[in-house]
Length: 433
Image (cartoon, rainbow, N blue to C red; front, side, top):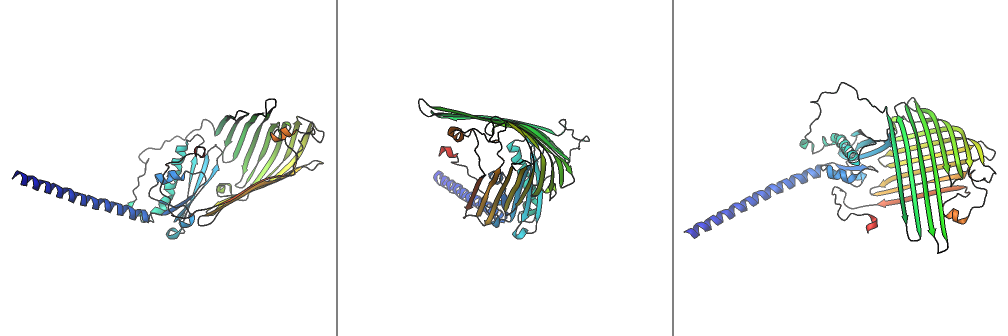
């Protein structure tokens, strides 16, 4: 009897466990199915941002499907950035709906402060993205799953306005020392800079100091060692006063010294005027600015120049046209500028710096850019013959009628359209491969 009772009890327990397993399995399966359904119905989002931590967005915003190509997206998010006068950055989020969200657009902004940590900036960008995407979620299959709260309404607003004891002034100090070497060579670099600025809606003022120096030593053999150094430093100041929404007036001034350019000192002052064909508040999206400067420069040289000068005055003017546009298809930047000297030698310089980033078709991106300069203003060149060692070590400059650099590249990717999963295993720097 005891054996039969025990056997019945075992059978009963086994039946309970089996039924529990089936019920639990059905519950888990139902949850997985429900989650899969929600995931399939979530909007597909493509984020176009050069400096954003997209991996962070994927980890923190799990209710969206991130895709790797804008042509596959239901929502394209274009994040532009521009430096603010306080030393921070203003980020503009432009949301554009596609497919079932077509003609649904939104815009948000986030301003970072200069003393913000990277973590605070990432969190601010994430919160701004969440806020801008809400209008699309309301129109999506996820609408019934949205729950929200509004914080802060229970608190009384402070009656007094916030007072800034610094009166909008911002100060930045930076320094960097680094070196490298081997048994037969060593190199040492020193860089530092300081600047302060005050920016309001009507006025932007900035002044600063910068310094660069390097020391190089090469041991060729037991009897030959080459030692070289190059130093430069300078200071600058400018002030821009707003005259309406598109015009600004002010000045540029600078002081510069460089052993490479044979300059003991170069002191300049230029009154300036600038016109922006678009309102300045649209600067994160598009700019077309025309800047004109005219003024003088006084120069002292370390060594006699090829024009038999130890010092001289130079009067010149400058015209610079700057264009910038950032859209869903990519971005376009171009600066065209010229300096012209009022001298009998007719010194001048012309620069053009284009840059294009274009998403041609699905998965295919093309980048093209560079700089080209027509050079005819090297009034500082030494009269004395320059040694080969000084040229190779970058201690001096030679006459050249032009300078340039170019770059271009394409990238193409294909495969799964989704890009939600984050996995950092085995990630390491190139130095460790």
